Length: 282
Image (cartoon, rainbow, N blue to C red; front, top):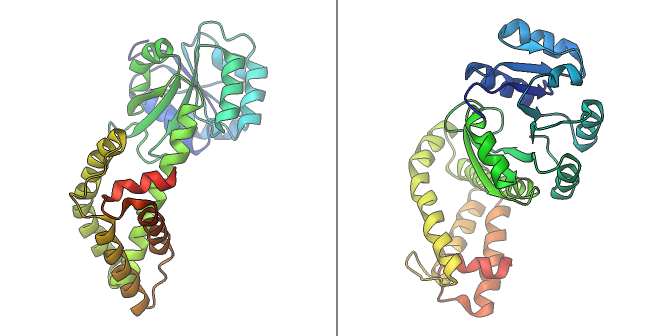
């Protein structure tokens, strides 16, 4: 595929609409279909480069890449029923599904199926910094990647079709952890939440740098105390909990981390670094 491959976007909800916009903006001839035609009509009125399809077969006529962004796995199955034979088209599914549902869809479509996860939500679709994860056959991903770069960063995470869904779910926990900790910091510090956000944004490069270092440690199974041992972290977390309590702020998130530290210390990791928490999580 090329930067001008022909694309059909099936689904014109919040995600499907911005995906269609991004493909059209990148110069891809793009057709859009939705079960509710008025959504497509509004989208085409806004972006005249898009072509409205009257049916799923109409949308798939003369396209190279089929993108699914519908409600759920049942809706995907209904669209595939209506589509009929897909031939050599690559099918990319951005609909939220479980890994098991995804594997069933991949079995149905065949090796031309890729499962996708829009890791930046709808906000960064079409932005070069937006992250999209894909799972499926390596040669299928390699063929589709030039077109998929219209949406943002295209990264393959494995040949198991369920891998993108697994990564999406796991990294949601990372996102919620960061946001939850931010909300706690706002509550503890008080004042302007925007001020806290600006300082936190300056602080986060240090924290994200730790991810790479700790990733290496986990892969090696070695947990140096370069950033402090678990015993040191236990005292720091106790201080955080006490500070929150003194200011009348709930510390549920921090208590959960403290519980993990206690379990790791009890398991013999008191002198190890924070990345040894992986051992008790496993």
